[in-house]
Length: 223
Ligand SMILES: Cc1cc2nc3c(=O)[nH]c(=O)nc-3n(C[C@H](O)[C@H](O)[C@H](O)COP(=O)(O)OP(=O)(O)OC[C@H]3O[C@@H](n4cnc5c(N)ncnc54)[C@H](O)[C@@H]3O)c2cc1C
Image (cartoon, rainbow, N blue to C red; front, side):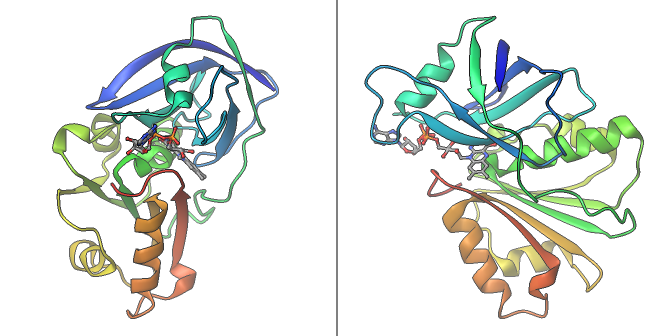
């Protein structure tokens, strides 16, 4: 389907949100992602398609993606930066099962490795707009506090926020800082190698695999 670019806004240091008009037939759950196809001349070897979580909530008028810019950046991201208002781009249907459990009594730990915060923005904004209370602790790791995004929405909702700046994120850190018990569901989202390593480390702990829900962001090697 096609979506129409509206505008972008700076969300935090090196992080930009791109907003688009929501097509009538687009339905999604907070936490799901889309594939964007952005044809451009002379693409680098990474090509013209990327997956992005929708950082918007279905309760909002516009849909958005939020991404990080590094130097150098891919030809894909350079093309994203050059989008003009009213320009149409192609996306897939939203997909993915990194979504909230239906049972609102389950206490949640959200672990964000850097830009892995995007699905939590969608989930928490949706809970905030729908006035649904849930017990959520967000452990948010970033290499620089200026790169922390969406803190206003998280605190307005009443999320317990624990910031981890320029420190390693591990299963031990998650357990030490959030004290999960067997009723908790632990969501982990971030660069693929970081999430993979944390999931491996959890195997050596009393937290069971069933308690973990993971979102692997390919294309980034570190937070
Ligand atoms: C399910 C899923 C959901 C996702 N959701 C999101 C999301 O919400 N937000 C998000 O940002 N990403 C998300 N991703 C990852 C996204 O698809 C991209 O892979 C990621 O943003 C990296 O983008 P890029 O490949 O354009 O590289 P860039 O971000 O441009 O670069 C990545 C790294 O490679 C380096 N690099 C890039 N080009 C060069 C070059 N020519 N020479 C040397 N080094 C270079 C950069 O300096 C940087 O360190 C998601 C992935 C999946 C699978």
